Each structure stands twice: as structure tokens, then as C-alpha cells.
Length: 456
Image 1: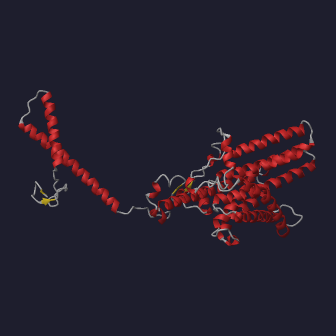
Image 2: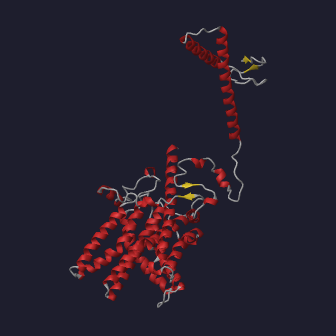
Image 3: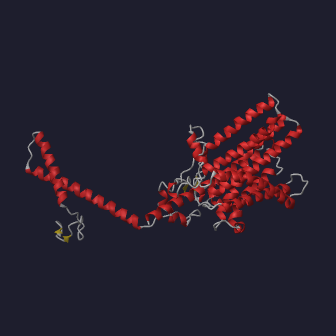
């Protein structure tokens, strides 16, 4: 214990201010610092060869002491203000946009990990994409689609080993553990090489038909031309599946068997929903969309039941896209074959090119959304038919139904340039990227849970 030099009150050794008079208390370290400053001043004056009276020494000592005490007072005042701010709750603007969940997450959302994909915003600054994200099932806030990551690695060089790693994933020995996963956005590239291979083979067979008039190459032109884009999109969804727990062998089974089975089931549903001889009116277009989307999603459901691995959103999208790709490829090859009846080679090629350009926004993406809807609404393992009674399933599954309806509807606006279909392609891929973002959130949660189990 020590005494205040002003009022003589007894105070603790660590106190900086007197509890009675409030005067700053000079500590031993402060006195030493003052003496040190005075000594330095003396040295400087001796170097200048100036006399230093005893009064000057005392004045310099008092001046240094006053400076130290002043610094102590400012520091104490800052600490006091800081303590008051910490004890007070953060103030929020009470407006029509205020939501309690932002108050609960105040401060924690400033970390880099939380801002990586979703950053909380007020409703006044929300975009259409943010609204769609919340409708699909994401949290309120801004979502970054990261659409450039789909093409970022396309023009970079890659080795054969890198390509083979994509095709061998998902087996008993090549499926990564949860700790090995990463929730960062994947950057697919192999799909572009697959498409390039299809394109080169298509050009070669087209030369065989046009230059050498070899009709035997015609079936190959149809198959390669109509399968190129759907098959490439399957590879993209395989690359987007960060879990890497679905083998390429199983995906090919889904593509071939599931694609054909969905066509068969759709024709059966046509018997009950769509008239035999029909013109494409709005009611008929809506019936076609229901029949085809139900036909695909039922087959997706059956293949998901066979999977014993985690039913994540990304897995559902892989299975759904494989069924949709099979449906699209076989349907497009049928339309291309029918166009041969016109005996017009240019019209035949137009059908192949047109359906190839529009394929990304059609059955493949619709099937992927249907698969995600099944997984997101499912609460059991394995998945059961009760999922079709969940509101959460229909809330998401209605999107491909409506898009399919608008795609087939006899809308005259922009018909010559297929503007409706192109707009729907953009919209449907916004939904797909939102679902990929939600799937990555599942990956992040799985990794965190695995780390917690390890620590325990």
C-alpha cells in the first residue's frame, strides 16, 4: 500500500488514480522514466557546452513528470470509454428492415469465413438473386454465385492424371474422408475437354457424310451431335460434387438406364395427361411439363434410394442431371432423326445445333433441380416416398415445371431468336448455382462436425 502525495489517502500499489481526490498517482516506473528523460536533457546540454543550474534540472524533471501523468490520464479515459462500450448492447436502427437475427449475428459475421459466400445485408439492398436464394432454402442475405469459377480453369493446361482423378472418384478406395473435403468453390474444367472431344468426332463424321457422301456415318453424326452437350454437363456436375462419393460407373448407369426409363415413364404419363393428337397450346404445354418432369424425378428418386452414401444436395444434383441428360440426349436424337424426313441437310444440322445450344438450360438443369428438391425435403435414410408429400419438395420442384411450361408454351414474343428459352437458361442456372452454394454449406458443416468429433 502507498499514500497519495496530494491528499495523503491510502491507495493500492497498482492504482493509477487516488480514489479520494482523483489525482494521478506517480509510480516508480514513471519516476524512473522522468529521471531518464531529465538525464538525456542534461547530456544534450553538456554537449552544447551550456551550464545547467539545479533549477533547470528540477524544471525539466517536473515537465517530464507532467507529460507522463497526462499520458496516464488519456489512457485511463480511453479504457473507461472502451469498457462502457463493451458493457452496452450494440444499437440497431429500428426500421421496417430490422430483423432480430442480424442482432444475434452482430459482430460474428465480420469474420472472413462467414463473408466467403454469404454476407448479411438489410432487406433494402437485397437483389433478385438474394430473394431466390431465400426462396430455395438459403439463409437471408447476399449470395455470391461465383459463376466465373465454372470457366476459370477451362483455358488452363491440365494433365492426363488430373482428368483420370475425376473419373476414378467415388469408389471404395477413392472417396475422400470428410476431413479431406474443402468447402471452397470447385473450378470444373474436364467437361470442356469432353465437349471438345465430341465436337472433333462430330466434325470428322460430318466430313464423311458431306465430302465422301458416306451414309454410314449418319447415325454417328446424330449420336455425337445430340449427346455432346448433355454428356459434358454430366461431367460438370460430377466435378461440382465436392463429396466425390458417386462413381462414374454409377453415373453412366443412371445416364443410360435412367434416361431411357424416364422417357418410358413420360410416355405412360402422356396417356393420362396429354391428348394423343394435340397442338401445343398453353394447357397442353403445362400438361407436357408435368408429365416429363414427374417422369424424370420419379426415376431420380429410385436411383437415390439405391445410394447408401450421404444424400447431400450435390449428390442429388449429380443423379438428377444424369437422368435429365439421358432424357435430353435420346429425345434430341429422335428429333434429329425425324428431321431427316424433310430431306433437308441444313434443317437437320439446325435441329442438332439448336438443341445443343439450348441444352444447358433444359432437361439437364431441370433434372438437377429435381434431384436437389428430393434431397432437401428428405428427412429419412434411405429416402422414402413420403418426400413427395413435403411442401419443401414442391416449393423447389415447381421451378422446373414452370420453366418447362414456359419453354414449350406458344409465346410469340422473341420467337425468331428464341429469347424466351435463352432467358430461361439464364434463370435456371441462377437456381443451379444457388443450390451449389447450399451444397457447399453442407460440406462446410460436415467438415466442422468431423473436427468436433476428432477433438472429443
